[in-house]
Length: 234
Image 1 (cartoon, rainbow, N blue to C red):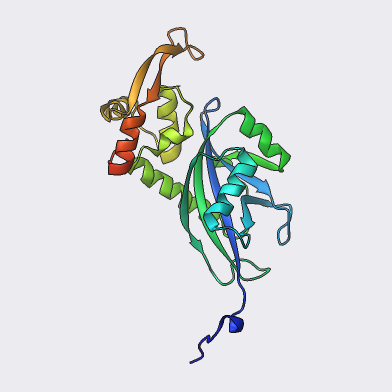
Image 2: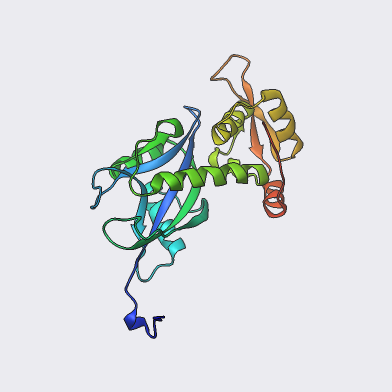
């Protein structure tokens, strides 16, 4: 059996990071993913997750944060490692191992305009183009992780503005689960968590009666984030 006896006998392997960036478009009521047109071969010009090779002075987390900041202008957002993708033949150009991360951001007009500079665009989950390499697998894994985390942690609030309505929150969770949810059951369960503070203002863009704004209780949010909880809406 051959064994590597020194670093000099080992063949270098490229390490990359790929980011699955979720954003909730409140106006359109759609959960979206950020994609960009690949700038290098192979598959130059085709749609891809945003990613990069890891620089020698970077950790994989630092590289993922660099990419997130470049494409969204944001830094203090939800970011979590997804998994490692290391199939020998995953990249036809060379031996490349990718560490995937997924993040959740509040999608507003500045983010929509910024991505255009990088030949990037936001796509609805139901309208994703064919992606390069194993990026479709990464998206599937990230969505599965998001669904599971939404049951156990109040991660959905990372996708909403500071104040929001129950209909907006309801639509967000429908988008996350990709399934119909009973509205009345949802309201009952989400209010029972104690996560929401009802505000005195209303959003009247949808009707004359309007819907009250809510904000999440940060102290309760931190408590549930640390302790975990389980909630099913469907």
